[in-house]
Image (tube, rainbow, N blue to C red; front, side, top):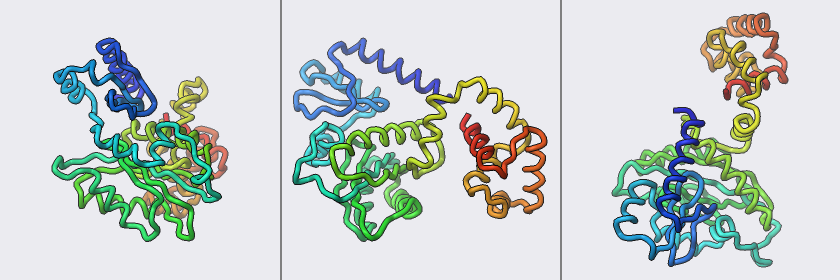
Length: 304
């Protein structure tokens, strides 16, 4: 099932739920109102008045969609950063600083019901020498980590190594979006909402990748939203990738900055063999993969 079909299916499910529960509202954030319940569905929150639900209806909703335990939401409400990012609370004068922070989003899937995902998050927090500004669970499969920019800057490989080790220890599967460092002021909430869209989009792709950021997400996101059905793109894709291993060659070459030697090693090819493939690709398609503009265009087509 491709992501277009999955998106349509999600929309149909949401519409059915809204027709069954006329008092329900679809919101961008969970409610902090004790008289209401919020359930995560797709990238939104289905919010219903607590008194309008019978115990049987509540149990049914828990089966249909991934339940957000109320205690996790209430616990998150105790965190200033949760209220800022999800409930729209403004940054106070005291909280606003000259420091820059980045927001790390974590998607956690537990494979052992006896081992809560907050154990994974608690261990994650202790694996780094510099303490984080804040960490909290949003629900039973989403966590947020706030990290201030300091002398030691952790890269994607650091986060990948730590998350893989913890997944093994706590029987989880984790995926992380490593945000950019932004100024800690009221603009950060809007920037986070865009980073959250990128992460949700990547999770829907069912890719084997585990670490995401703006650099490996935004091209794919905007290609999907604006370019994927362009006639020139569709025609170019069908003509360019008829050659064996063309897509793999373009992808690995782009990921290694067009470097022939490194790409040949990654593909377990002799350098001359790779050069022959690139020459043959140019003769067949007219695109020279040694030219970065041509390489970037062909790389965009691999998203199709």
